[in-house]
Image (cartoon, rainbow, N blue to C red; front, side):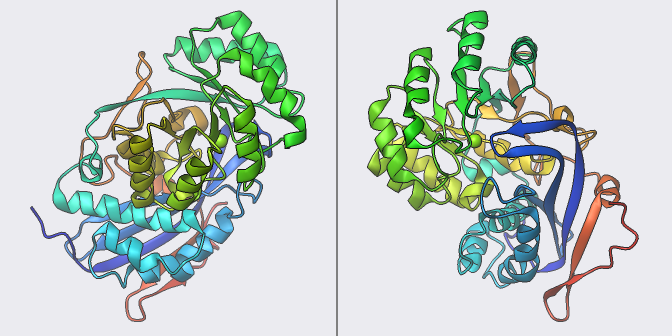
Length: 391
Ligand SMILES: [Mg+2]
């Protein structure tokens, strides 16, 4: 096995713009093109790592945006990571720990070091994380549609494609009606859940009382993104488990929510909670307390999905993940071959070392909006001119 650490001699941070095939509509707005941040590092033995920091373009999901994430990675996170005592991702996490919040930026840099560590060790990333599953059950998240019939058609399509769980995005006026319609058409055997993306207040608890009869797997983030007390009050009134997404941004948030009984289900997105090491901590906490968990998605490219798939190979991830293949979301993925959902509703966990997927750098270059590169002499990042980039 190769030594676990070597010197980083090349580092690049990209902001790329990826047009979505179809506008994604949720309680906080519409997304038609996705800007995401990519981190690429290379060590002096020639091993490389790729990571993705998939904050959303806007501050309506969480405070961080693609732009703020790009800036934090370029100005702080990468520089701090270079001061780590080794290339061990856990040391990199410690080195970046002075950064408050900015979970996406830290997670993206950390992910690149996991891919690098995997490449150096010759073991798949899933094995480094302690996972053993070779495939991951997946569900599909359906955005708010123009009509009920459109939603019912999409549920039928996704079920026929093998997806093992359906998640409906809801907002006031598009909630009990759509859940009732899906249950009436498809029965109670399908796994069904809803995601409110924090679109309600406790004054609207009647909606959730009405949803309680539909045997949902969970009701995701019904109330404000930081409203632990409201979620606790609502959970006490409901049979259905509340799942927290936006509210859980660190292992201590997860512990607090479970201690308060503010939720009985957790959606782990590695980038939202500050990275894979933080995700492992939440995983172990949930396993110890018997709390079901699953991996959420941030419309990542295949680069980000690789880390998510590796994480999902751990035994605590007992419910289907949100993991639409990039080809369903985008004109083309940044990795080739990309991953697909098999007819039984599973995605294979990459077994190759490194990222586990082949990154197509030409596609990244063609979509680059901004690029910063490491100046080896000063060990700081330098912005490249963007004049020649197609935006
Ligand atoms: Mg969610």
